[in-house]
Length: 212
Image 1 (tube, rainbow, N blue to C red):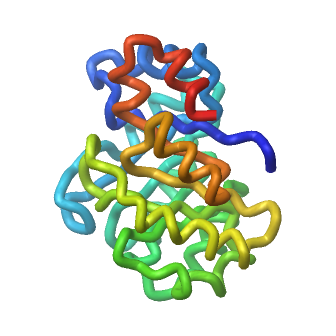
Image 2 (cartoon, one colour; image 1 turned 90 degrees about the vertical axis):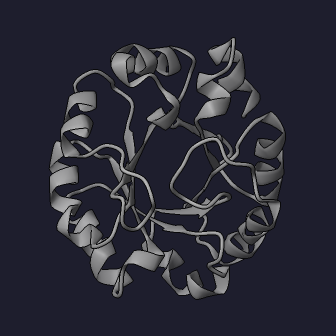
């Protein structure tokens, strides 16, 4: 997969003008819309839920890349899938039975992703790569936008790449900008999530293009 999938995170958008801000990244050439769902338990912050996903589905043609930073994700897979998620990513650290969660997500005809936090070693998840559509490597501690990139986390990417099937999407989220994007893609990532770098930029089109 040569094309780098750019998935701007609406965590950095203006929530009073979400439709406008989604259109801005859509017009700038973004591929997906990344939505961070936080529950205040798995991570120390609360963001959006099913109604917001449902509303955004009506105003964009781009796939909705929904990252569940929540405990007990199995309870919420069906509502988010029905609300319009095209990719649902759960956290490895939040579940006991990875294959059953993956099966549940895929039963709705959407892509199944799994995310790993900075302290999780890649060896722990290699056995699941064959059943996943996407593996998300967090290069910050999940929970808040605007944190600094942790390069030691990006060093997991080549390990994952070596064991991954060719069609696996390796996504990176956390502190992504033009410089750190290059580090990640050189390591083998093919999807990048960026929030502040895109939304706080003076030129959103240039910001999106610079990540490729």
